[in-house]
Image (cartoon, helix red, strand yellow):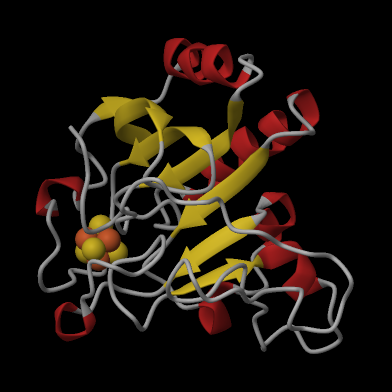
Length: 202
Ligand code: SF4
């Protein structure tokens, strides 16, 4: 696995303050992608022990809520094994931190991937320029979905995703509307949220 950056105290790619790993490699070629330089799986740097230690140093901090995997696409074939191994290690070492994953793939295509056992929230789908909306919560275009992975996988029919939150921060959705008594409250956004694929920091 290769990567372009590790960003810290990030508020734009998931609930709370987070560390974000931006991996190299994406084959979706979305029109309007802000960073086609991330498409090459051979680009960036090798993800080595030093990079892992940098992430763990962030996760050691009590105020860091979790890690977000973005890119590029963490589910690109060049990344899947490395991402899965890192997720497993993080869940063992930091059971109270959550894991978010951004991918250009749709839930229906990847819903049986074993690594999803480690993912709390998944933002799925390619970035579609015609559906771009800067006010969307945690995503860049309205076709994308912010999915509560574990709630979805707990259902009999996993092909119907349960959303973690609605399109905008004033529309509560998620497990609450799915009939369970777990009340998912999206982080109260003090800042404008952007799609990880739409806006990146390098
Ligand atoms: S927007 Fe995201 S999924 Fe689409 S090409 Fe760019 S990095 Fe890949």
